Image (tube, rainbow, N blue to C red):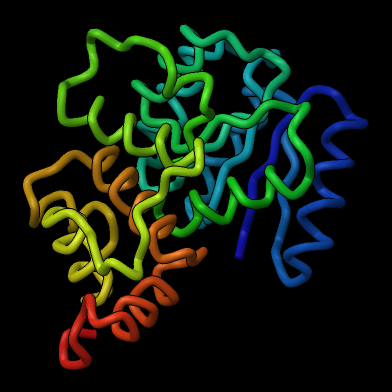
Length: 229
């Protein structure tokens, strides 16, 4: 496992490194202190499992930087961890392709939960974003975001009722086949962002934190047959 973490405040950067090292003791952690550092690093290395970066840093505007990083290594999920928490900015980062947005005021446990969710192929969208009107967002995506909002408010679908949407069942089958998000999106005719939200929802419904556990739990509940694992 390999992380790239970036922040221009040394104290916070070292604190984040400590949290990750404590919870992922075998992980390699590469530090950056500006967008320029990130550009130089990803130009040489593309094997990161996650990029975790501050929003406002020297070297570029955040909009230019995130576009450049995402275009340079589109397969690597990006999480923003920032003191800036304006709803319009959060929405724009998700439009670029960011997989998660975390406030620096979040607890360590919540930060780690968001990281685990994103690394499992899901998407962490703060409740503040899910509660705002997004007229530019396609209706199907808005419905998925509404489902995530309901889940955050404690209205998860009960797995005892063995209820998943037909699309979530299709995504679950693709997880059982070991397909990455990009191939799931291609196979089902979806965007990768939509696939991430479906994965987030089904992992919430199944009360698991990774893809393999989702498949195993689905088999146990009769949502997936053994011969489809």
